[in-house]
Amino acid sequence: MSSRRPCALRLGPLARASVIAIILGKRQMRRALAVPASILVLAGTAAPTSAQSWVVAPASDNAEIISQLFWFTLVLATIVFLLVEGLLIYSSLRFRRRAPLPLREPPQIHGNTRLEVMWATVPALILIGLFGVTVTRMGELSQLPVNDPSTLKISVTGRQFQWTFGYGDTGVTSTETLHLPVGRPLLFEVTSMDVIHSFWVPDMYGKIDANPGRINRITFQAKHEGTFRGVCAELCGAGHGTMLFRVEAVPQGDFDQWIEQQRTGAAAPGAAAGGEAAQQAAPIIAQKGCGGCHVIPGIPGASGTVGPNLSGVASRTRIAAGAVPNNGPDDLKRWISNPPAVKPGTIMPNTGLTDAEASTVVAFLETLK
Ligand code: CUA
Image (cartoon, rainbow, N blue to C red; front, side):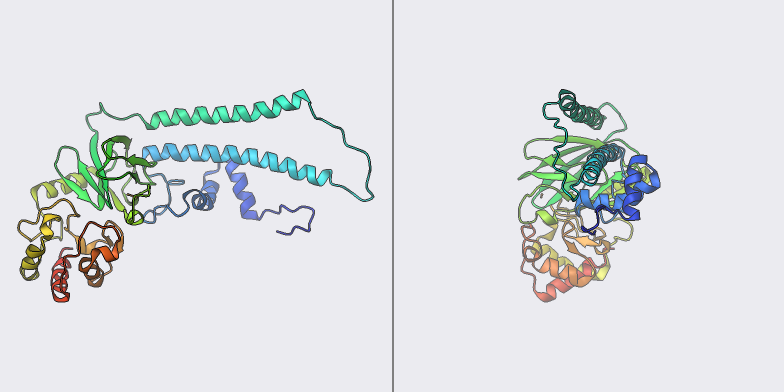
C-alpha cells in the first residue's frame, strides 16, 4: 500500500469483494471470506481433522448458533468500521490542508448538543442490540434436554493429561476418542479429577471448564458424520498442549454397535489379537502391569480403565492422548520405552522395558489394528 498516493486505502479486488460479501451476506462470498476470518478468530485452534472450521461449517446445532452470532457481530462491526473509517478518510482527503495555506478557521462544533447526543446514543443502541441478541442466543444454547428421553448423557472427566468419556448407564468408557451418535440430543457432564481443565470441540461447541468437585453441563447434537478435533483449553500443567482427543460422529446404528462391542468385550473389527505375538508379549505385559491401566485385546486380565483401551491402537494416527504421531512401530516403541520423556507430565510411567522387550511388545501391539 503506497502512502504517497492521496487515496491510501486501495483495497485489492478480493478484499473489496469480501467487504461487500459481509454486508450483502452472500453465502459464496462469506465462504471465501471465512478463511482469513477463521485464521483471525481461531488463531490456530481450527480443527485440522475437519475440512472447514465451525465458522463456515458448524458440525452441531449449537455450533450453528455460535456461528450465526459470530457472523452477525462481524457484519455489524464491519458496517461500523466502514462507516467510521470511510468518514475519516473522506474528511482527511476532502478537508486536507492545501497550499497556499488558507488562514481561516473551520466552523467550531464543540458543545453541539445534537451531535453529542447522537454519537452517544447510536453506539449505545448498537451495543444494547448486540447484547440482546447475544443473551437470547445464549439462552437457547443453555437449554438442556433433561426431560427428553432420547438424550444420551456423556460424562467427561479431565485429568492430567487426558480425557475419559462415559456413555449413559452402559458402563462403557473411552479415552482418546469421544464417540457420538449423529442427530441425538447429547448432555455432557463435565468435571475434573485434579486441576481445572477446559473441554473444547471447536466444531461442536464453545469451551466449558472442567472443575474438580463440580459438574458443568452443556448440550449439542452432532449434525453429520465426521472426525473432529478436541482439546483442553485451560493451561493445566506440563502436558496441557498435548491433552487432545478425537471426536468420531457416527450414525446411531454404528454407535450402538460400538457400545455393544465394548460391553461384551468383543474386539473392535480387526482388533483381534495375533496369536503368537500375543503369547510372546503376554509375560512382559503381565510383569510390567500394563493391564492395570489398559484394556488389551488378547491379554487375559488386562482390563484397566485408567489409560486408553488399546483395541485398534496400531491403526490410530496418534497415540498418547493425541500427543504423539503413530506412523509405525518406531513411534509406538519410542512411546512405551519412556513415556515421560515423550510426553512431559504423563502418568504413564517408564516401566524399564529393555530394547528387546519393547520390540516384542510393539510387535504384538502392531497386530491390534
Ligand atoms: Cu488439561 Cu490443559
